[in-house]
Image (cartoon, rainbow, N blue to C red; front, top):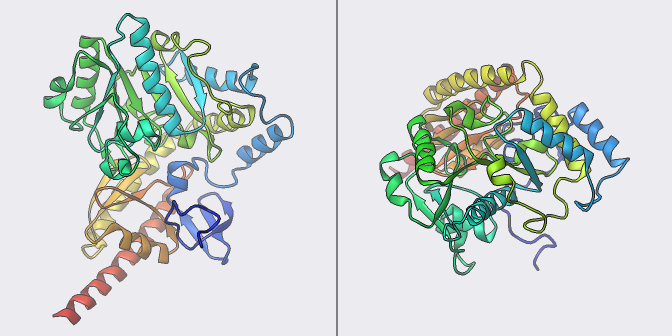
Length: 400
């Protein structure tokens, strides 16, 4: 018989009952070092005292009222985001896919209001991942995510990622804007080049298009800057945010300049839960910690050190890993054997990781991680790799 939970996820036979910092304790009593962070979500780690208190205090007051009324917590969170970014205005929602939907709608609406109703198409890039809604699997463009869900949603085109030479040829008179991940996460931790990002801005300025960055995974300090586009010196018109913003509590956001945001007037878009008092209280606490003096500098220091440590992991891995990717605390190890085998071996060493495309092991620990934590994770990676390499050699010897 089918289980009560739909069989949508391939879950490890592991459940957690307690967390503290970068550690999770399973129901079997074993402690795991968490370098997956709920897929780059638990930005302040587990059971962070300030976040726990903020959520508990707000829950005891009011959790939800809907957007029929003012929400002071949302106003304060929006003001904080505006003060610390390029944006003039913020729309709250519940997830990364919703934020990307909002970004696409905002681009189309602004073009319509500016006298270009024909500009409805969004240019995305090969290898992208923008979410699992019907529109966003079309924006993503991966046939594996689209199979069985009928015709793709019209209006999304694709071009090679980080390739400036093919960019202009992908623009049409119907193009409204461009959406890009500064670092493609799901497809294998692939950063865009500075030249490509500069070319995107130049093309958008030349053709009157809007430039949108999907910062769902790269944002809120993950790369060592509040948002990854800051590394490139390129100002977007709009970005999508989610994952780390709530530290584990669901919240998403669309940040935009006034030129776009002014067109999202009452009745044009909406959400029942988006930006409710509880979610925004969580977001305020997370953002307060990340913007506190020295926090992002520490992420950069630890992230740089982690990258060097991972190069050593590759050298000591017995041929299991052959390269390091990424920036800050968004890292990937390219695997030689199937990444699923590597994840299982690493899990045996009580280290939690995440798979990514292109046979990459993704490492996205909480942003509070220390260099000592990273060293411990690397030792577990090496041990797992060496065991896997020995097992592989034994199998090959038996076959021969």
